[in-house]
Image (cartoon, rainbow, N blue to C red; front, side):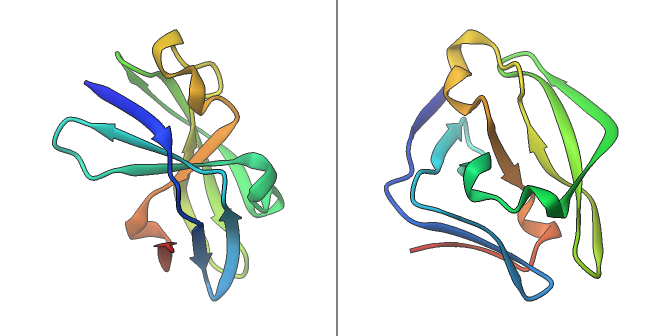
Length: 110
């Protein structure tokens, strides 16, 4: 079961000593036993640091994900993903992106 709700915290993502995303409007996605994933609106992300890749994946519950590498003097390949046309039950994450915690310096929730 997937549950999406407002994160109710400020979410800040740091990569290579730069804040690449900072949002008070993030969404928290909880899915089964997985750790929560924070989806940040594109307006709060330095999209100029993201480079779209050809990598895609499919989730039967969310739809097709597109991926981006993160670059700012260092590159983290496929570090960011987005469901640009999510399935209806998770439409709340459309126009949002999420970051792999192990590919960025930190994802802080305060």
